[in-house]
Amino acid sequence: MPALPKNRWFVLLTVMLAFLPIVVDLTILHIAIPSLTQALSATGTEVLWIIDIYPLVMASLLIPMGTLADRIGHRTLLAVGLTIFLLGSLAGAFSPNAEFLIGARAAMAVGSAMVMPCILAIIRQTFEDDKERALALGLWGSVGSAGAALGPLIGGAMLEHYWWGSVFLVNVPILLVVGPLVVLSAPHRPVGSQKGWTIGQALMLMAGLLASVYALKSFAKPDASWALSGALLLVGAALLAVFVVKQRRAADPMLDVSLLSIPAIRVGVIMALVVMGALAGVELTLSQELQFVLGQTPLEAGIYMLPLMVAAAVGGPLGGYLLGLAGLRWVASCSLLAAAIAVGSLGMADLHDAGVEIIFMLAVLGLVLSIGLTASSVAIMSSAPIEKAGSAGALEATSYELGTGFGITGFGIFLASVYMRAIEVPAAIATQIPATASDSIGETFLAASRLPDDESAALIDAGKIAFMEAHGSLLVASAWVIAALALLVVLMLREPRPAETLRDG
Image 1 (cartoon, one colour):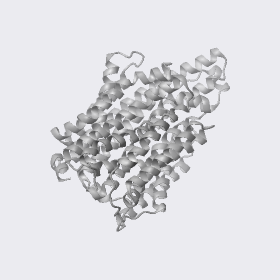
Image 2: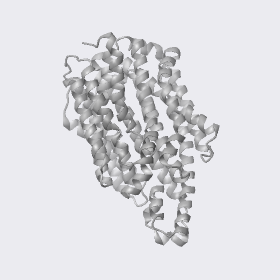
Image 3: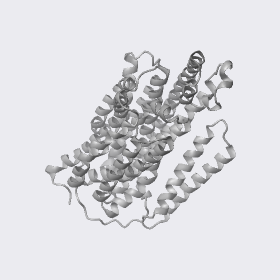
Image 4: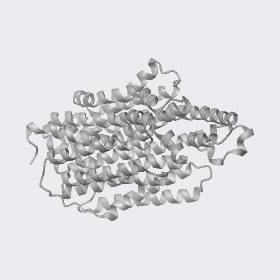
């Protein structure tokens, strides 16, 4: 039975609080990367995997976990997922090396994959009224975007006083209090879904995603074997293609592909991919420039990005209101266009001077990305039948995590490739440093720490100049891609009108 009307807002509060640590963990490490790199002597590739393994493993498991939730019950899987996430957080906090941390992050991703579709399904089941559901999803989206923006600030505050592993311990008290509340207050519905669920298909999806991403990362290395990387990419793509074919042919598929036939859901998925990719990529690269290039502390870097966080908190409810006022087509396309302008402006700005222009562009970016996130959530969840709430929630959450993972991967590969070409290592010290010193600014700083003061300063200066050039080029190129997608959304939603699509859903 659905929750009693007087209880529904308390249910929403508890699921949002349970969701907060999961979304914060998408970005909290961004601010800790310089400290983590130095403490664990992590290579540039290891750093990307430490960040990427969380969204990518989560994305590969969200669809099967969403289907599993429909089979065994959302409350049951939610309780198991929160427990696994809690244990993974404890393991991550005390990781002795980069490899162990990557494994801990993967465990956290498994728990998150169980939790995310359950939360969305509970919201869908708790709020039967369309207007209330839109408001509830807007508030949930606000927590998502604000939580992702809040990650760097929390991380910076923790690193000001404690070691890098402390960023994981913030999850523990929240989950210990909120976990039991959300499990007890969540509505209980009879379990009736009989969709197919096999571990083989879940592993196929995971292997396809990880193989594809690993191949893309390998291409960016200067000593990469293009034949091996290309073969791995083909294997990954083939696994993903086989997974899709199996879902289309199955009588009771793990992923209901028919959901993507609804225009609003298709656009919602695209919006989620783009919004989360842009948010994760911008935050990761910006936090590195603030600390490595500008020399800010983690807390100072988090405060620098505060306008992004504050505006993101406002964007969720505003997005729900605008969606009802103007329709999905124009809210989606205009938010993407505004994000493109903001990202391009940041790419051409001088970050050394945090004047009104920088503050304004960060605020605009946080606001419009949060609006876009809410638009995608309302489009997907309001258009899905209630009996497919778990599958729709998994599809939406998968889009978020794939967007985050591919955003970090794409931004990281582009940044690394430009950085390696742009850095000019002084000839006098070129033979004294390892070849990997030019792969990333983190490895440049590691190499510089082993040199005498004068030579160390020269290498660091070269790294800073190269990183500023790479970061600016990355943001400008990203702005053009986001602008092109804004146009694509307008074309995709030309027929039927979005207001009719949402009302029919």
